[in-house]
Image (cartoon, rainbow, N blue to C red; front, side, top):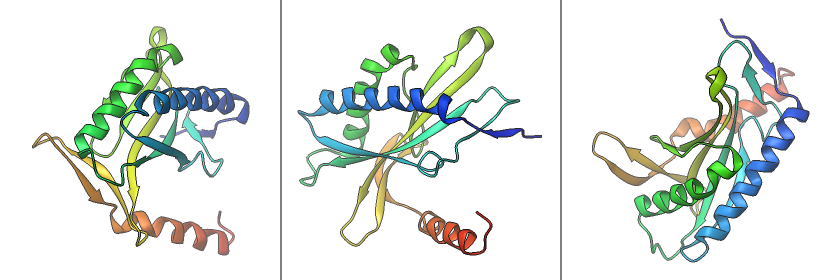
Length: 172
């Protein structure tokens, strides 16, 4: 059984501010290779962050990193490795553990080790918007140990339509 509650702005604001400071450090760190913009997405963007108070998972942020590599100087794996190394360089200073790599994102977590609890985490997706409006992300194929740019699945684009339908029907 889940026991979701909204995370208060009072709790969210300092964590978000600290995360933004970390991201700015990383932007400075990777500047000689490439630049990037970032955007909070998902529940943070909609001011609807929740956490299950009965679990040990805390709340999470979702951030898209949009890399400016129009000349395609870097392969997908290089971009992800450069970013993860830069985050790892500064993560501890901000209370985060080292990056954990997964299929679509890499994650950093703030842990309360005494109570075996994750206080909050952040998932970073590395994305690229094409001229036609489609979006690609760096995907890690664990079985073949291979990184590639992949198009977002159709359900990704349907999300905004679903939200609009909910709002139009008074269900948001």
